Image (cartoon, rainbow, N blue to C red; front, side, top):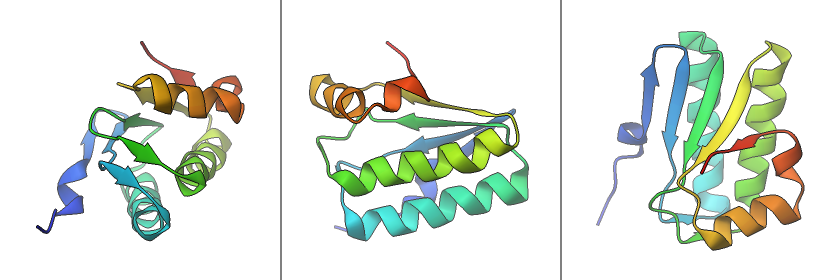
Length: 106
């Protein structure tokens, strides 16, 4: 089954919404990072929202996606948000300290 990743990126007002896949690993992280960067630069969005509703697995490359987009968007005064995090994803974000630089929404 092939999933079209472009459908997972939407710009709503000043927000780039990124629907994260079921598994976030190195192979997908390169693509997600590139697409998110393209949207940030071309659309001029001020904030990025990562939606983890469907995500069941995320390795360290997922953390890299978030840190990279945080560095880019915070340079322009924007914020990064994580929404729909299950217990495991939220715990991963907390352990690596991302809760100090991004907002994890309940």
